[in-house]
Length: 379
Image (cartoon, rainbow, N blue to C red; front, side, top):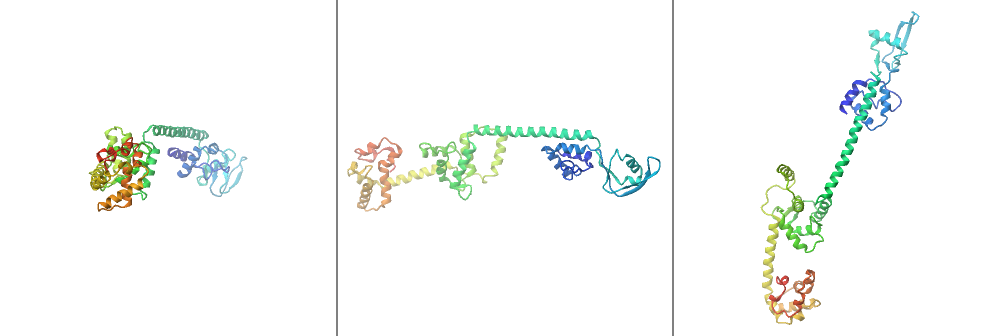
C-alpha cells in the first residue's frame, strides 16, 4: 500500500474535488500521504471505489482559477473581448479552450491557473482496477492462510497428549494452593495438587492415589527452591514432560531452554521433590517405629485380654475406653482423641478402605503382633 500511495500522489495529487460525497473529495484523495493511505484502505474494503475511479478520470471543468483576473483577448470576429474570471472558477478544456490558450500563453496569467484534470483517463482505470485485484487477492490469501493455520493448530492441539484444557485444570488447582500468586507452593502440597488434577498431569479419579503420587514424584525431576518449595513452571514442565516428552534437536532444545530460564528462579538446585518425599518416607518410618515402641506395653496388655471381644467394627468407643484404661494402669496418660486414632487403625474401618481380605484374621484368634496383617504392622 505504501508504493500505491506514492504512485497515486504522483498521478492524481491535483485532481479536482467533487461534490458527490463518495468520490474524490477532501476526505478521499491523493494530495497527502496520510490521506492517500486512508483512501487506499477504504478502496480495499470495497467502499465506493468505482466512484473514486470515475472522479480520477475527469477532464471537464477542471482548470481552476486561483485568483481574480481581468484581461482582454481577441474575439472570434477579430475584435478585442474583455474577459473577467473570479477566484475559484473552473474552466472547461473544450468549451473554454480559447481562454485557456490565451492565459497559458501569457506569463502573467499562467500563474492564475491550476490544472486539476487527469493525465490520462485510462491510467485511473488501470490504477484502481489493478489495486483492487491485487490487494483483494492478497486479502483472500491472507484470510485463507489464517483459517488453515487455525485448523492446523486445532488439529495439533487435539492430537497432543497434554492439551490446553489439561493445563487449565492444572492452573486452577495451583491457584487453590497459591491464592496470592507467588508461583511457589510447599513440596508437601504436591500430593494435594496431583490429587486435584485429572490425568494425564494428575491422578484425580485413579485408584491407589497415594501410590500413584509417589511414583510420579520419583519419576520426574522437580527442583526444590529454598529446600521446601517448588515453582509453578518447573512443576508443570516436569509433569508435562513425563507424559509428552520427546527428543528434539539440540538447537531447538537450547532455544527453549533460554526461554524457560528467563521465567524460572535463578540458581541450580541441589535437591528435587523426590529427595524430599524420600526424606519424608524415612521420617515416617522412624516415627512409626517410635510409636510401636511406645505402644509395646499397651499391646501386651491388650493381648492378655479377649482380643475377639476387643476388636470389632461396632465397638470402637468401647475399645478406646479400654485402651485408656490400660494406659492408666501402666501409669501413662493418653487423650481420648489419640486413643480413638489408635483404635481406628486396629478396627475394620480402615481395612475396609483398603479393600483388604485379611479382615477375618483380625476378628479371629490373634494373640501376637506378628499375626497382624502387613498393612497394620506399622501400628
